[in-house]
Image 1 (tube, rainbow, N blue to C red):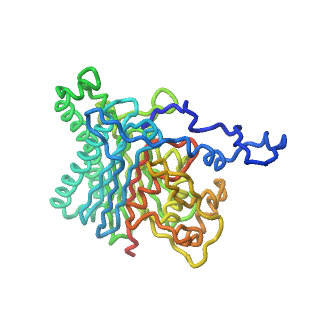
Image 2 (image 1 turned 45 degrees about the horizontal axis):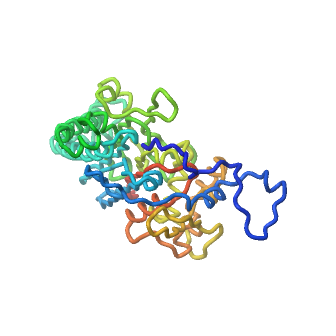
Image 3 (image 1 turned 60 degrees about the vertical axis):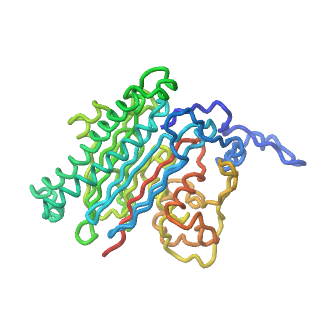
Length: 425
């Protein structure tokens, strides 16, 4: 959650013109022609500077965090990266995520600390870790004590059997948010007399210093992997999405949360006693049973770049395939234009990273629908077709992609967790 104000010239208005190349003539029509997003980003890419995180004696968030888990029913891939604004200013990333699983379920928690709060990175870390641990322990106990719960989750959705099993899991996901808030308060007791934090803040820490959004999901494979039950809670902005990669049209996308807004534009709400009350958290809970095979949780650093979620979650999935994070189906024998695009990385090395963009193939929502219908025939446009790889491991490829894809006006921390269910049919 970054409240950075673009006052340093990192992003230029569309009316601004690029410097002319030597000997290039410029007509009146050229002057009045607005620049494309790509031209603007090419012009401004070198303005962003990389600065190491400034050590003030308090907890330093790592530059990035990535994780991969191979399960009996699929893979869980997650990564977070420090946003351009934080890199430019030498400040910590505020995002965090944690995942867990057993043979019966997968768990993912994603948190985005408030950029205006000095210790929000600690709040996001503590919340994600404690909630994921709580869910794994308590879901494991539930499945151990109730051997019939999967059968009841497969029952008719209007039946008492389904409703009671659904309620048991949904209530644990809700309680994980309360557990996250409790962990924040416990951490506050530990820090409130720590001289390092007193010196940095000029006072004792308070709970609002740890403000963070909270997105959690518990996903259960059913019927031998043919269906999945998912229960989610979303407090604040970002996005939780279920995607059926075998389905066409709008039916392929199912939103599993709703971004909360504050009193003013670009505001959001955070984990608090108010937002975890029975009435409030019930309104922030979603459950689903169906054939969705991809569950994605992301902070607003990704969600805002792929807004609106329908059909942009389809574009996000295609981008993940084109860049080798998820499997790309279709021939890669002969690459097709347009070629991948390179921009200088905001890193100490400034090394350019070539990425492929679905928006190069589909410029508007209508053409995006057509592209989605042809998603299994896009192999020739992928990085693999061009002999390019972002890394040996899926989590590394996700992290490199998150750190280097370019969207205009995008400078926030980015976190994305993907629960990728294998096709077990």
